[in-house]
Image (cartoon, rainbow, N blue to C red; front, side, top):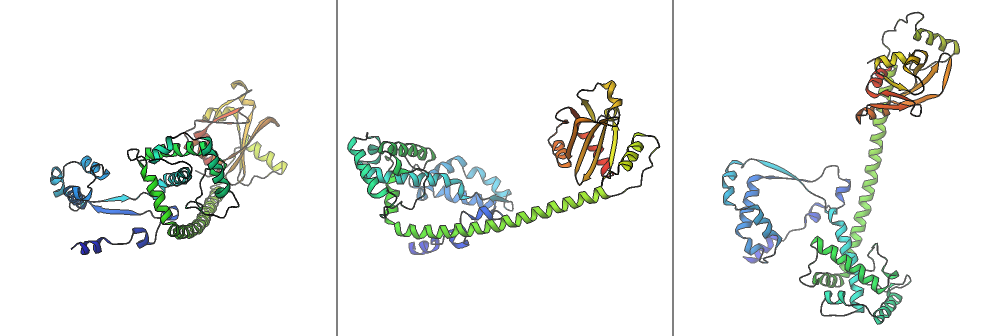
Length: 391
């Protein structure tokens, strides 16, 4: 019977069966999702709770705490009857969330491997709290010279490990201090425990030494997987760049179409400001591809577009003008003038994207002419859309 059960539970890891690893989440367009019925969740809860003493003989097992937090299974029987057909979806979290802890654990094991070759004790905690002596420092310098120098060909269990800490440049005291800091961080994450004098670290080092060859093969596979992931990420980046370019081309073409869209030609009342402005443009030979409109500051203020123009009082607004022109898709030029003379410094290039972004950010005002001119964002944008996009 035992052999049958062992055969049933002897299955491949999900990563091996589905040919995936933790890097798949970096380039996968669709994240893995688990669909499960609520009735199945209750059944699993009931099964685990009834057999918890066999599943978790250790009284400190985290699964026992989870079962206690979930409460009594019998109290959920009424709910179980009503959720037989209900189904929920669970989005799986990537394993890379533990990448920092794994890197810290690897770095700490590498430090400990050299520490226990310099000092000895009944357990790891005793070694770590033992003050280093001058003799220990000399042993460490010899170890660095013989095994950690750049031209050394001897390979330890962690000689291929890439860590942030440069162990060879440390003194022995610095090495122990770094290892202690790492141990305290790992203890906070629950990776190791103080009550067994951090024996988990020594056990992990022993396993790594015994499986050195197998781990090298595993690293080669991981390296190949990383290269494959990088290639897929490059392909995805190229695809996204092409999508982005296509999107921008579409938006630009849509804006060109909108600005080129001609409505009914408006009749200009003779001797008005716009009529005079068009005549001036014709005389000077200036042609704006998408139009040009001239307003007095008073007119724009009455519309609520102009808030203030520094250097000019409201009484002077009848004698200064603002011209809004466009010769490029989605870009508008604002010029200030007083009669036939341009106002010094009164010129600004205003992209439509900036106006839309300001409106999206709920900005009430925008300043131009180096802060001299202030306009109402919504009303100014409304004027632009009405004049240049026939909206």
